[in-house]
Image (cartoon, rainbow, N blue to C red; front, side, top):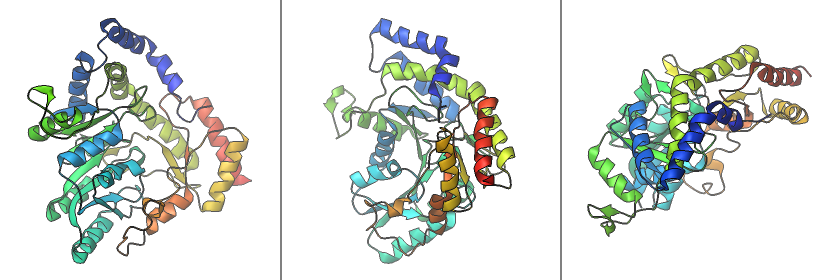
Length: 377
């Protein structure tokens, strides 16, 4: 059994993926070209954005966003305490300071109340300039943008949507990737839309930002091309093979995979209702369940369940075992008095079960029965 079975997806899409790869091999154009430009148009249309710029990976996508917004030394970048380090790591590389915020206990996404408290704490201290907010759609579930966006506007902060786990999800009729001045995503293989290597993308409706980010992607190139360097940039491009692979995968995500993820999640929800804390999705929203995360009663119950799963050779994961503020690299950073109560509670209780659109009902029932056995033992 696989935690995320990429082989099952490949078998379902094999003719289209093989043909896409073969077409690139026949042209021998591996960098840029038609597959990349076509994919960017399809991604922009899918997300409801004017522009999409593909790049080398999801972390680069965030770094490009920070660079394009001029974020650097002396700036504060606000981020939820529950995420992967890549959400704010590139800002640190540019000299900015991460300021973590607690999460909401139902969605596990950025808490608007904690965000505003942390902004005011930074302003009161007077050492950093609040510059940007990274809203992470954790586990594939969109953030509360109706509450977060006005806070960003109130304090003049750039909103960046980190849709690495949520591409294909939607918030009140708008797709993930459509929020903020800039949005980013990752095509790491196990993401809801993943390639067979590394890849990422940046989304914006701002034509000037589009031009700037395209320049930054290719060594700061100018109008004269890659040898007309007008700024310091990166070498971050999505190669043609990955772009070709992503085209049939995007079609599958749009046409049936997102719906199939809902079916799998509903079976889990029905089995565990009243026994464990199941994922909450706000009214009018659709999660793509990049991970199906449950909360146990406490750490002891979680360990009992995980031990039983391991014994039966059923894969599981803990996303994430440590909140960002408690990571060794960030432990000495100012926390501005925020207790991170929800984030700490989440990390002590969370675990995730196998989740992908091709998970067969019979195999899923084995997973469900094993968890229920652990709860009843």
